[in-house]
Length: 288
Image (cartoon, rainbow, N blue to C red; front, side, top):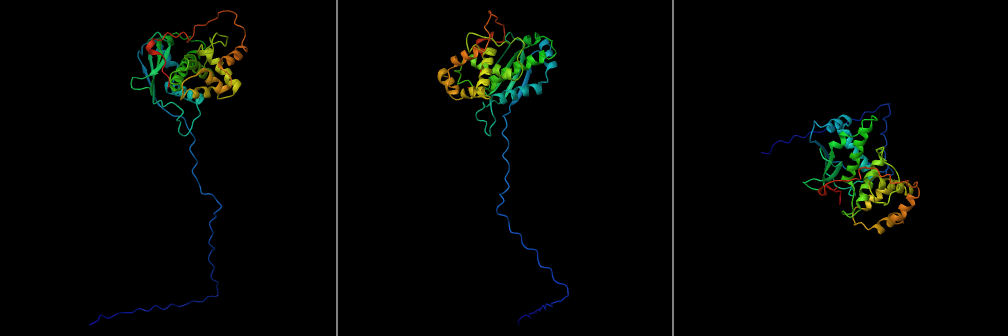
């Protein structure tokens, strides 16, 4: 027997009214002329690295002077920022900046003022060795003298952590001159520095630092940055190097610079950092 099938019929009833039915809102057509929203590219920033401090002798007078005149976390980081902003422009990849992974400041008793080298782990980890004896002898007056001298030495040595050296073939005087140029631009030159004539352009330290400052003035901001970056991926050839950058050899540039300085009345040599008595196995190791 077939099951009964129930059929349901629905009847629609139309309702009329004196009130008009509102017409639907028109559909807005999409504006194809407006560009799609895009995320802004992040602003390039400088690389960061781990910073560490070791003090081998907390009871040393130099240690007390160091920690009472410097806020280590602030001033150590400031030294990195000063060096990177002076020697490089940040990019998205920063592949033109040495891949430094850490810098360890080691305060210890030693005769040498300061030096920088790669760690025993590898050369991407740097060590700055700083003499507690030297720190203990920094004059207390004027009141900012100790802090400025300590920070000036840190900036100088920090340059050696981040600069290029033409695979180790660049003159040591140029390497040291770039470091003191950065210190000079940071406003941390000590009172005994003098801009004076010297025998060689690559005598180093403040002599070459002042020369590079003159180059920066004559050839525009960023000139020393170009010098450093030209030492990145090829060996140093003096004539080709300077002529390629400035259209003149370094000796011609040095002659022009020297002519802007007064005659040297006598041998006024000042005993500065350039009197480098570092042990032979402690020579600065810079990025190659």
